[in-house]
Each structure stands twice: as C-alpha cells, then as structure tokens.
Amino acid sequence: MVSFMKECGMCNGWLEEKKPCPRCDGTMYDKGRVTDFLDEYSPYLDAKYTDLVDGDKDSSNTDECVHMFVCNKCGFQDIQAK
Image 1 (tube, rainbow, N blue to C red):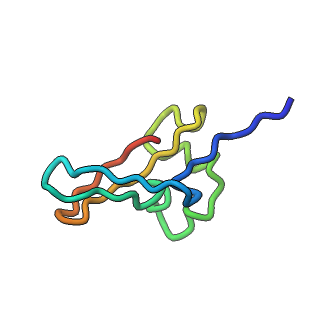
Image 2 (tube, helix red, strand yellow):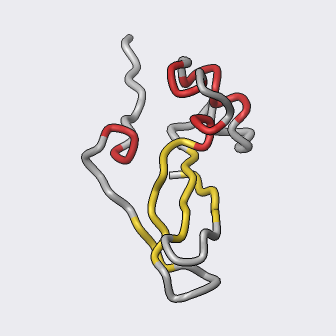
Image 3 (tube, one colour):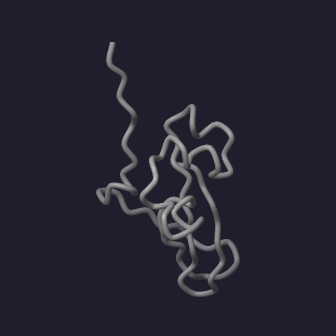
C-alpha cells in the first residue's frame, strides 16, 4: 500500500492565505513554514525532520504544516498550523 502526504497549498504556492491582525487593523500574510526561519539551511532540509522542531508536537504525525504570519502594518507575528 502506498501512502501519500497531503500537500500544503501555501508551501507550494497555489494557495494564499491572509487574515486580519488581532492587534491593529492591518493584514497578516503568510511568510512560510516556521522552520524555514531556524537558520539559513533549514528551508532545504526534509520536512520529516524539521517537523520535529516546529513547535507542534503532532505535526510530524499529521498533515499539518506550521506557518508564520506577519502583520504588514504593526509587525505582529503569529504561528498557525494549517
């Protein structure tokens, strides 16, 4: 039996998500996977390893992808699993 991992539309560029900022009237935009901000090499590492340190203890066992959202007005940052 072959199992397939769910694709993240935000990581693959076919889904853009934005949300209202909870601190101001700005808009929060997706800036990528939270693990891409660990160091300069982390965006090139296999997700099965970086999912172990993304702050979501279940993301390596589920199809969740943890992304960083940043407000374009006040700079507020939020991390959300998608």
